[in-house]
Length: 507
Image 1 (spheres, rainbow, N blue to C red):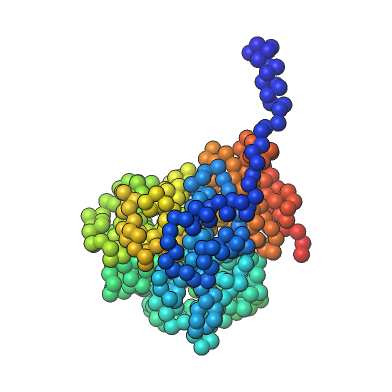
Image 2 (cartoon, one colour):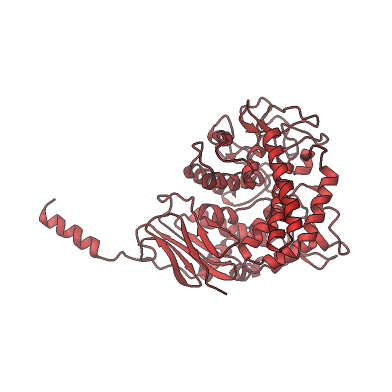
């Protein structure tokens, strides 16, 4: 290199980067909301009308901006859409979140998803009321329709407490959650310790493995109950109730062993359903990934080979998303149309479960079946799928090849509150991993070359304010690297997108 060229390079390196001005949070929200409000006729108005949605988002939602305009748009759209489902239940007077925007009351099929998403709201009073609605909202007793669908309520309550830090509030629900678990044991427990469920009561109608009237042993409900038992044990331990902690830790351990010993199909190298007589059902479905949602498989035992099916185009990978059944199955997509089929079409409900499970695998299981780039590719397909007629949209389910929403613009299907998005972005892609102790842990799955920058801020965590900022070349925020702020103060940093940890200030 010539002396003149060397001097030019040196001068260039010494010059500070041109820093782009970051728009204020209120300005970002207003811009997105104006576009969302203009794109629809407001057919249903619940507690917060479109005209007040910007103020509600400003008060309640962690702020996120990034170099990918589509990801940022869908992030704000999903919160804007979720807000539409907030209403007062007339009978109990509680705040609740509906699943169908046209229905008058909540249903429990996506309750676990709701609480995992709601745990990131800055104001937790809405979620407090929502839990109380289910556990005490029917003449101070649980709602009669709480068990109409399988769900992971206790697990989601615990996971929410890991974000809010309110162990006392979660512990106050302990007796209710114990009673709820015992009710499930009576209703759907089997003498062998596993659980059964009709696929329709898993909110997964017309599956390739079951039916609306067969009592199959499915990875769904048995894994949910193992996660619930482990969460109850953790809550009891935090509350100093060792008798309850020991009892439910034993239940969780036994159910975990039963899932691994009974539902793992070594021939298919996958977790599969069984009949009521425990006969193998020789099909792979996305529910076979659910054990990792609750960290049930033992690391180092070879179970992670199942995840090779995620990136196999004969398995679960399709142009428009992750299918709910393996594409090689001869009965794939053969059960009709528009009757809530789970025989292969892409359901955001299942996609959200699978992505959460995948994040756990990537962080906590030594394996060579999948990578963080596989997670990012699946996440981005999920982002791109959330459009209808060129506009942001979230519905029930979609065609795996074309991305067409199968229920179209059906009013029942619009704004379908049946999955997570913000939780996937915050906890998994950016990597804020909630913990019970006084440590903030961040382990991003975002590839360093994916986005030039992002900023997540106004995250309320254990009573503190967190912000995370990535700037690959220093042109957005003036400093290269990955930085964690606690209460406005720099707490940890790294030159690349690598894990960060920091201790929270003492109360």
